[in-house]
Length: 459
Image 1 (cartoon, helix red, strand yellow):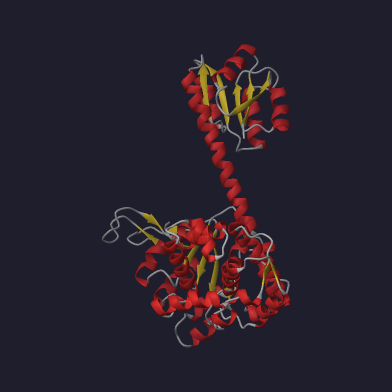
Image 2 (tube, one colour):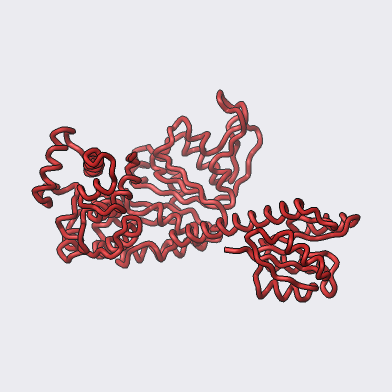
């Protein structure tokens, strides 16, 4: 797509010179003869970049720059000034101009300046697109569920998102605690700020303090430079502490102090660092029980339990299962090349009958496996391999023969390991010919490619 450049210059000769010098770039031009015409074209044509002389009839170039920046501060403006009027160019830079060029033009100078400005425009566009995509993905509307328990969760999350209140999200593993937490952030007034996540269960206890507070150069062996911690990085936004129930008591005391005083010291530091964060914590543990067992600080518990949101397990909102199943089929269908799959009534009934210890995460995994095995347009009960039932009861003789050989050779495997091993054996038999291996497995080439990427199987 061509970038649109607005050239504002009262001399026709200079406008033609500029378009000639930049004509081989991927751009198109809009031209204005004075400040008034430039302002009208800016509002109607929405240019990506503006090159403007400072001395213009009608609206002066400096006034035009101010008007443009007040309307859209992201549009870069390159100002043109006569040699000897550098002071004006410096003033323009202070007002937000991207850069300046002097008359007479040096071709290389203006080309470098314009190329750099267009690169900034593209980066800003990409960042804007990525942020919109993230916000869309974590919007409350994309959290699937119409059951009464989930409606209550969404009501609470929507109300607390409008505040800076600390939130404690609880629920079993796989229920969507992180998804709800992200949705709260992206629907809050802090949405433009950072969202920094820390999983307290995965960071070793010995490293957690340095990870959270950062450290100064020389604070310990290997600290060769200053490193900001998660609190510092999250300032102005939200800090999401996942699995906070796994945090040790010593770290809990330090966390409580930061939450109360909104400041801390880096490891090896002597000066307090002020922060402005909103805390969202999540856990699959019963913190009240941990408090009674003296494994979690009571004062910290009451400090983070200001606004509790409990996400119900999938077995307590089974009316949401058909919606979730169809959502995952649609979501995964693009990558797998299977866009029109549907479930039989028997398959939906089976899904609703299960206990779902792994909740939504387990449901998604089972749907993904079913989509791989399904060669028609309908996902049936036969395609739904689960951890609670024997895989053999849903398989035909050919499938059973293949899997039996692998199990005898490899021993007991989990379902994903079994899928991976089957793909490896098929590739070996097909001498790494992906199309042939797909036919051996009864899969489409696109589906097999998807599995190869997921399991990082080299071809």
